[in-house]
Length: 164
Image 1 (cartoon, rainbow, N blue to C red):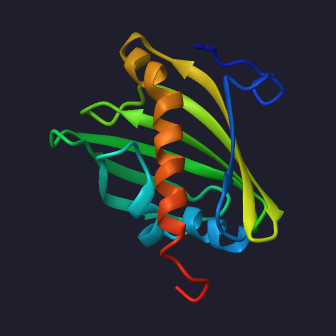
Image 2: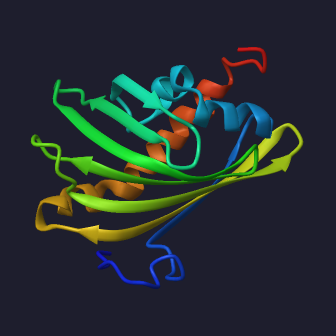
């Protein structure tokens, strides 16, 4: 799964692709991804919370999420938005950080939102750009983590309305 940085990184095939129908209109699902008060409610695997969720949703804007695991461990993540096409597409990088704030791996995510009326076809393409030996547990849990996050997103959007 690990891939080293290269000049063709954006042309390489993704390491992980997950598609899911979300039971909410596209505008609502997109809002759940770009509004930190919403993202904090569903981001991360089952049992995780997000005591810190800061999003500067613009190209070059920073993402900072601190996830608290069920055992109380805090997992720090930073990243940057690269592209926002509302309500169709988000492209952002993310890096889980060690205790000193150094990235354990660099990942590029492309999220697409396809309008299906009352539903949204959400596709996540994830490309690992750089990894370290310390990132192996993160890589091994990436697919399950995304699947659980999308389960939580699907449940959470049922509580949202477009005026929130």
